[in-house]
Length: 383
Image (tube, rainbow, N blue to C red; front, side):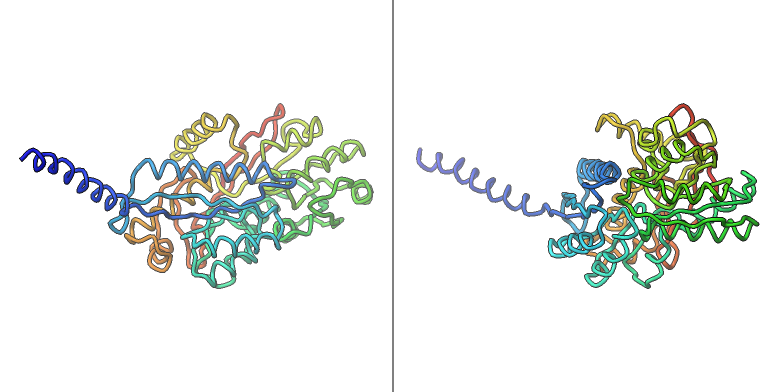
């Protein structure tokens, strides 16, 4: 009798152990890929993005989402493309081989565009939080989306602003020959010309250059009112320093690549006073959405001990958009949730997110900034 009594708790323990195993089996690991330049000149922007991806993943896991009858545990598989197209395609294939269910990235248009073919062939949805070259969504890939306005909007707005608001008549243009830099510079020139400006000089550099004296000396002779640079802050900052050394007084303009908190540090006192440097960021929130963005920035700083650099809010929203599409489809499988992603209506920290037929964000906004006292200062949000 005693042995029978002892067997009951043992049997209960065994049953509990099996029940625990069955419960654990209900958890499903879902990998989301993230790609950005974690090494190289713009690693500060890549790390900014990766941090936001980690933050979104942690918050999703804290919610304990049930999708397809299983408790989902998201994991961020973060890869470094160093801003290099070849490395970008290599890590894209790595993510495909790892069977990620979605990708947020890449940061640069030059890496995003070639990588997008790999994701498309594998049927994996991709949301770029920052790539602005129009070609990305013009390839006909139903897996490609972006949550920021493209170069046609960004470069065009800056070109019109240079002529109409800054009264620029003579404009010089420099680009770094990347897909992003060349694209935004071309759109700027189109709009500036259409608004009545003369393009008095067009020069080229590369995204790793440090000496711009030759091209800036050639430009100085043309006496431009505005110099537009298509490229990133790691090049734009030193270029602005050399403009000051050469006594070039033209205003300096650029797209979101130079529109960072780090730009003031990279340029030093050459950043000048209010209105010397004018840039536009693809994105921006109006009054009704400001609190969400401010709350995100505060939470980000509390978590990582640093300020948001540039694209982090768009990465954060992109991860959440993918998770929301999965919930709507009740599936984490790309083939099943892709249609929900295409028709998503999501209220993010960057504002409302919905995509058009190409995968571009609908009604994308732009934020115009200048620098004052070494700090980036918002001038206006425009559509």
